Length: 492
Image 1 (spheres, rainbow, N blue to C red):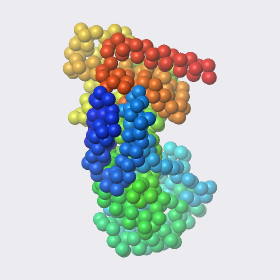
Image 2: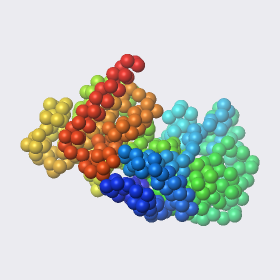
Image 3: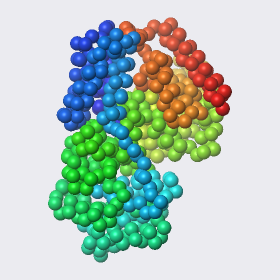
Image 4: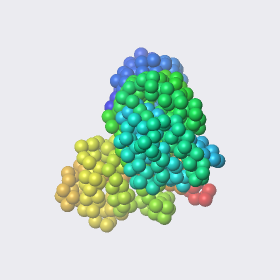
């Protein structure tokens, strides 16, 4: 998601990190690269200007320039301003005691009908099966598609291909839901290839007569500023409650997502991250800002992990993490469970410091990438899987030959596991808020860099850490992890 924007922003921040000493002059040069990254991502020009004015005002102050690590301060400022730009957002559906009516609207091809199924999937996870209403009477194929989705999910679909009036159809469907005791009704309304008055009049009539509790606009995130323009037009006609942005798993540059709230005043409430019906995420500005800066999204990672691991295995995995017993066998078990196409890249993209593993999978399908990782682990002995630190150069060559991969791929897998295991161990047993706070504290203390890894640059100098300094920092981090685990045990 937003790979180009991530790479450009990280390059801009890296240019600041390379300076021997930060001054107001070279700070402004670095911020100019940040500005260019946002413009290249098709973010609205006025949004970029307002955003950069706030960032520059905070980043060029003496408090930042004279701090021990001004670059880290800049990362924090950009992060906080991104969160403010994207939020605040309330991603809950606000279900009422009786029938809650949710109306979806949008242009044809935005993924509106599929999004009905994705919202239904979220509701089913909360034990609230909805009634889907096929109110797009202009396209019989849309009615058929919604019926297929209903069959896949096992939820009811209200449709009538002979109907001519979508308002009457929607009113009848809501009355049927009340009679059946269904708590949520989702209306799939008509779309057009472009905004026209006839479409807006029809949607306005449905809005006035049915009086839906929430109206969401579904927009294609790959259409850039056109998505923002359509959101503005729909909001003027209907007073939207939120936007659902789809197709963010493609080559969307991020401009629409970063612009829509500022330009229209309408928040993005959900984002579609794939074609499958479970690929819809509630939108959290802090997590998205963290992802854009390449820092992962631990909140969403744990939510995704809950979907993959059943409750019994989840408790066993957390016990191992708390006791520091996480092994490559456990990692392999999770890989085997994540066989769904696209899920592997998604999970890696949510992990701090997993950029290298993502790049290794860029040119492979998800199943192929997982098979390579599993093959590497299977080529290890039981002792090597339990403790990867015993793997020396000769063993790496043997493992690589057994798995049919290059030795550097073995190195990469072991290195990423070495980074991930202590981090996950320190976060085990905490709620999501506690996990996020622990990561921020370790980043602020210098035990982790913004990507969740051990830092390689000496604070305030721009110079690389020596091996002795890294060893000392590693000891400090391990001491901090032990202290956190001890505190967790005392609390429990």
